[in-house]
Image (tube, rainbow, N blue to C red):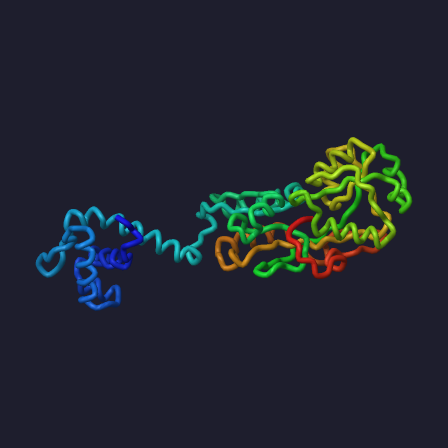
Length: 334
C-alpha cells in the first residue's frame, strides 16, 4: 500500500475511535462531527478491506484487524507527539542526544577538558562530539545540520548566526629552548630575519586570525618568511621544538605545551594581539531547548569575567582582532 496516497487524518480518526470505543466520543475528542468520523471510517474500511469496528451494545467493538493495528497507531502517534513536544520536555539528566561542537586544536587542548567535565555532570547520558574546523567547513558550516555550535574568534556574523562572548586570549611566539632568541629580546630585526611556521586550520587556508596577524605585523614593519605551513597549532609547536623556526600561537596553548615540550615562549617585538573568542551557533538550533542547554554548559565552563580576560597585560600595547579586521564575513578559521 502506498502510504503517500493515504490521508493520515483517517488513521488519527481510527486511533481515537479505537481508544474511545465510540464514534460520538471520538468526534468530541477530535472536535469534528460524528458524521465526519463515520465518513472517515468508511474510507478506511474501503482502503483496508476490513470493517475495523462494529456496533456492540451502546459502543463499538474492534475487529481482530483493528486490534492488530491499535498498538502500532498508539506508538506512532505517541512518537509524533513526543517529537512535537520535545523542547518542553527536554531533560538534561535523561537525554541521550549527541551534541557536536567545532573548534581548533587550541580549544581541543585548552578548553575541552572544562567543557567535557561540565557536560558529563549536566548531561550524564548524552554524547559529546568534538570536530575540527576542517570538518565544520567541509560539512556546510553550522547551517549544515550536523554541528550545533563552534568556538571561534569574534567577527561580524553571517546572516542567521548568533554568538556569545567567552574569553579573550593574547598571542606569543614559541621557539625551541636552546634557540638564541629564547634568551634575548626579540627585536624587529631578529624577527624579520627568522623563518616562520604558518598555521592554516580550515581546509588549508588562513582565516580570521591569520589575516589579522598578517595585517598587524605589516603595520609595525614586521614580516614573516614562511618555511613550513601546518594544519594545527600543535603541529607548529612540534616543528618549532625540533628546528630553528618560530611559530605564533595563543599564550594559553604555548604555556601548556611548554610544560611538556622543549619550547620557550617569546614575546612579540611589537604590539601583542588579543583575540576575543565567542561561541557561535546557527538560527537552525537557536530555539531548540536541548541545543540551548548545551550552549549554556559550554558558556558556563569557559566564560571568564571581562576584567580577567586575556590575563595580565604585557609591557606593550595590544591590538584587538575585531579592530584589525572590520567588516570581515569569513567563518571560523583562527
